[in-house]
Image (tube, rainbow, N blue to C red; front, side, top):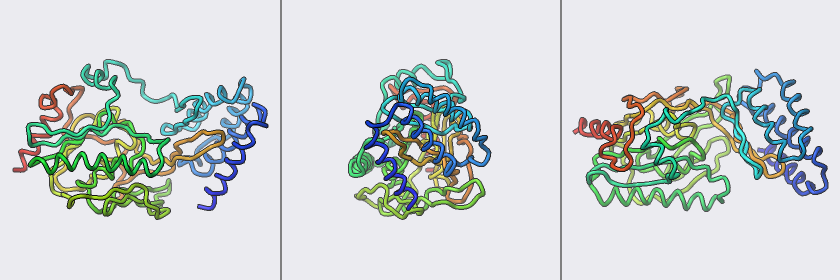
Length: 344
């Protein structure tokens, strides 16, 4: 904790003096800070050839200005196999370039049409008896903690409005558009189905426990610092027995994958759809100089029983089909309903 506080003061000093620095000085300070954090906290730091990172910094120093130099972060991430690293700045967003390249043929046309609309959080009822939740990616980088709590409460309340108005036989949680972000609001909004428990564990490269994430009374926290992360006020008793079907897709990643991991071991749960993207490592949001932030990969995400899932492979495979205009005709939803009916 002390290290984090000290670094925040250093970053603050960099930012307050930035108007007095040359472009080259700013670039140097930024890449020194980036390298420090990677050497200190990056999960795979012991296997990195750091001379390659030093060489990339030298190239970045030749950039015309600080904004242009940030493009070299992609080269850094590529050099250290940082598949789950992301840099956010006012100048752009940067990640590694070696990941799978998706093409239009990888997706159902109905999925693409929905994707173009940038779908947000949705709750609805299907056939008056099945609840449906669309849980998309949620970065929430620029929101205050109070705003995050309010947004999480809103999502929870929307779920409970349906739950109390209908006799729901099962809930479908659609993660096909969930490529990651801040998982704490997602999981806390789903408190009604998860209840009070340990959701997942974070382990280091040596298999040592770093932290345990718990949910209790509508509050999610991380045992590493003991601080409450997201807070809601539950309005009803939890229902740990209501059937839940999780729909995954090839773009389901990171926080999106952590939702099935958190449901692992729960009674009456099934996964339907396609295998996920395979980004099941944990990231911490770390501030760097000059209003930049990196999601820094620090640990493996393991379920409550300390099992690691490199990828989420659904119980029922449904490939490349979607119908968001009439969910009752979506094969993924149909399979979920079959599962609910089989439990009667």
